Amino acid sequence: MTLKIHNTLTRRLEDFQPIEPGHVRMYVCGMTIYDLCHIGHARMMMAFDVVQRWLKVSGYRVTYVRNITDIDDKIIKRAVERGITLRALTDEMTAAMHQDIAVLGIEPPTLEPRATEYVPQMLSLIDTLQQKGLAYQADNGDVNYAVRKFEGYGKLSGKSLDDLRAGERVAVASDKNDPLDFVLWKSAKPDEPAEAQWASAYGAGRPGWHIECSAMSCATLGETFDIHGGGADLQFPHHENEIAQSEGATGKPLARFWVHNGFVRVDNEKMSKSLGNFFTIREVLAKYDPETVRFFILRAHYRSALNYSDVHLDDARGSLKRLYTALSLVPAAPVTAIDWDQPHAQRFRAAMDEDFGTPEAVAVLFELAGEVNRSKDPAIAGLLKALGGTLGLLQQDPPAFLQQTLSPPLLLNQSAIFAPTVSQGPSLEEISALIVQRTAAKQAKDFAEADRIRKVLLEQGIVLKDGPAGTTWERA
Image 1 (cartoon, rainbow, N blue to C red):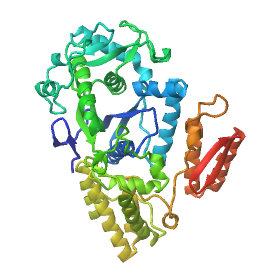
Image 2 (image 1 turned 30 degrees about the horizontal axis):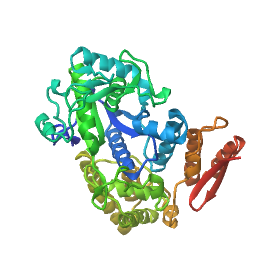
Image 3 (image 1 turned 120 degrees about the horizontal axis):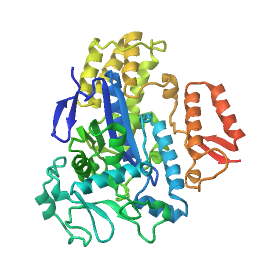
Image 4 (image 1 turned 60 degrees about the vertical axis):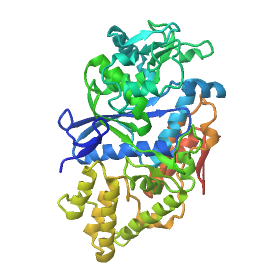
């Protein structure tokens, strides 16, 4: 069966074939890294974790790029409030993000470019747009994109220029020729820190948000690549503006497939920091074990809305225990390669090949669990575990999982995350990586390795403290 993916650009399911046979290039818009990630961010990263996992199962080599936005108004504001450098803030938050998503089993991307490392490429792209008459410098020094000069603006979101113009609520800004125009380069402001400014032919300043992803995706994957992904909230204006910038500069399609995951909702409203109705990943993991959270997210289709509540998470935990209960009946189940001709495996593959249909794939896992309960067949139990593994599920020791009533991850303590970066000793990211390694060692019952990591950290002045709420640390 051919993999089919829903393409936001065409609004239909399409057969997927990569531009380069056997190699998929995928870019996903990552975090603006000024605070801890919330469960909505986890849902986005989980969605594309499953996408890249299934592409690999399907035999493709995958180059997966997920960027970090480390220069932005919110980042500048937060760094100034805390009295630390932009880099200190973004390093801390990046380390926290890496640890949180590692605990959830989200695999790292192939490349993770930071926006501040690609400013020359952004300036080159802006220069090309200006030469083509698609950009202009305003009197205030900002460089703006001339939206009406790009034919096809609105094709991704389905918004016409007339509709957008009719929906305006404010008068045209004096620094724009048209209210629809958006900024490519922001002129330096007197109250901004010097580290937030770069020299350019347009004067000191910094890039706009949209140009960052156009430059990073082109630099890492080429002018046209296979899949561009992100949350549904990015479809307009961010991804629409990326298309205008990139295709305006190159004359080529930016991406063949545009893929967007649905929102996480709380009380029928989108979860977001602006609404104040969000839960950080750490807050959720203080109550629920990581695999339950992963299972909760994956049993909904990535394009559908995901309703967050303790009731739904409790139900997910109960359902996951049913799968592990079946596996616990056959402790010697072999770990073998998946026989894709087996009827259950065929149905699982058909579900995943239909736009990464995890709800239907999870239903197959429960069918297998029922077979295991009836037959105690080690081959069926092995298939259940192997198919679950393609989704990052069912890889723990079944008795150990069933014995735990609450399994919060081993996290950095909150005070450490929000403390200024300390120049002596290991960095927060290094500490985070070692704690994650120790977690994996303990789960594998490799206690000698867990003790070795504890000793390594202690020799560097880092004291670990294990407790019912997880592992915290402090400098000796």
